[in-house]
Image (cartoon, rainbow, N blue to C red; front, side, top):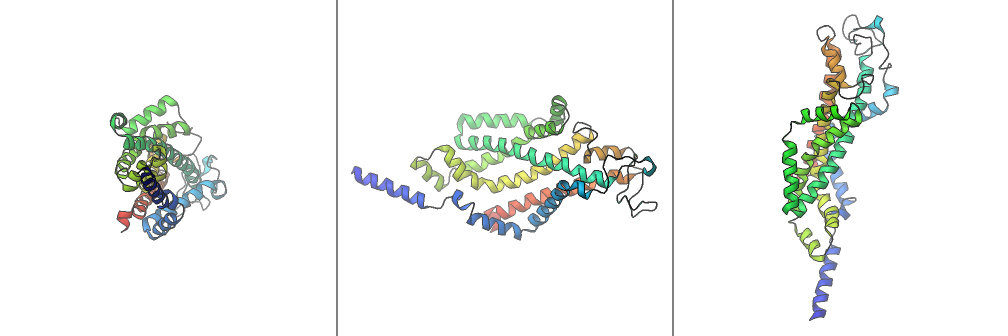
Length: 312
């Protein structure tokens, strides 16, 4: 009798091991399928292409920008863009009240926006996903404690809390990134928790638990790859939110120093002379709008392309 039980357990183990796990197929067949789905999704290609173009502009800013963004020329102050009367061909988007090139400042401002977007969204995703996985898997008092923490944390207005955190930590890119990550981890925690609870009821997870796989292995190899599509879409949306928060903090003077060009700082400067030099205000506002729209389109495209339900 004992031999039959041992043989049945061995056959069950072989069947589970023979089953292609999500973790094994993710880097190969599933990755190719997802890549084809992304290329076939217009929102993903358009949004992703715009983000890639913006990254290239930020990386090669010293070679793309026609002027030094900090150089002042009071003799060329308040020049309009090239398509308006009285423009200077050397300043495509005109100049501000100090004679600084608007286009060059716009290009260099993309660096701060993208650094904050990618780093802050990544940190928030790592923290929120880890807590969400544990809350969804262990349930009970662990889930209750993490869920209550999320509820309390989300009760605070995010923008006001970010301003308070930056004011306490001090101005700088690091403080802005830390404030965004500390505030927005709750978005990832709630989504990953719900996805983990749904995936934990799957047959493949039940079989892995019956065999005796440790929880951390099940979470990393079985559940996390299935949660990854929703997580990637949320990361893209969070990047757009981070760009907006950084612009708000720059607008009120709580981001980087005034020497560094930022879109929010340009908007704050242009607001003072909006009736005379409206282009100083409009250019960074347009760049902010296009960047956030691109991140949102990419996130929506990722969700449509990677979600097997929506892809049918």
